[in-house]
Amino acid sequence: MNNTQPKVRLAIIGTGSMGGMHAESYQKIDNVKVVAAVDTNETQLIEFCDKHDIEHRFTSLSALLAWNQFDAVSNVTPDQVHHATSLQVIAANKHLLCEKPLAVNYQDAREMADAATDAGVINMVNLSYRNVPSIQKAAQLVADGSIGQIRHFEASYLQSWLTQPAWGDWKSQSQWLWRLSSEHGSKGVLGDVGIHIIDFVTFVANDMPKNLSCQLQTFKKAEGDKIGEYPLDANDSFVMHMQLHNDALGTVSATRFASGHHNDLRLRIYGDKGGLEVSFENNISRLRACLEEALESATWHEVECEEVATIYQKFIESILLNTQDMPNFERGAQLQELLDEAMGEHK
Image (cartoon, rainbow, N blue to C red; front, top):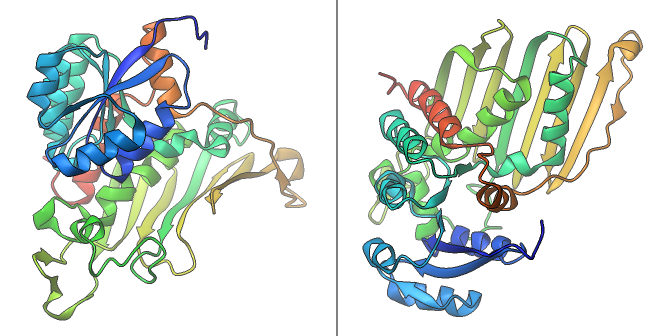
């Protein structure tokens, strides 16, 4: 990117741990400057801005919008307020990158996607595992016909933070406990990481499901299924059966009880001319293939994958070039419709 271009002035709404990731990611990119941050928690806001050298600090979105000295927003608020905050940003004609899931139901996600399209602003949803080199290369191989017609797939997202304290003590820390409580806005592991693994499958396959069914399970984790103010009722594991429009069948699953896995994604996808195995484990991206000439011997080989741009780089470049990139709000709405159907909330 040409660093002689004017800088995109960016504001971050929400100053939790993911907000910090956004700030650090933007600070590595030329032609963008984080000029403001917003959080209702003033103490947290001040600490965040001091840490990331952000000059302008606001305790309300309305105050930021009234100030108006910015071009784009990263929305890193809790899931249940993505809808309300994003619509205000769009109405102010600002470009917007929103954390996943886009909303907590399809109706809200649909409204956000339509509003962004009508306003003509650059809009993207942070499906961060699109940044993995192996998934991008796998999608290219499928699109090129390297594995023929897709017939079967298996995908999983494996976490284990309910079995060990590597990321913190979930039994006492609110940043984890809310994820286990529907009363506090959680849709469980399905809503939290299910969107990533469903996107993993459908992006590589370049196809969406024509039908799906999903089994959700919540396990007993505390006496009375409650810790303090947090009822522990959100799903901990799911297994989904999915059929794509081309009739390919497969399973998609995720859990927070995958002992031995901190944060790992896997996809195995098979066609009538070959198969691919995509993995992102221990932050290492890997792609293996068995293609038509090696099917009889069942010989698999490593596929070299080039590094790819991050969602943050793509968002800024889209603004500078005035060209909409993917994944956009429309994609976020499509995925939310699938999540609603899996939760039994599809209308």
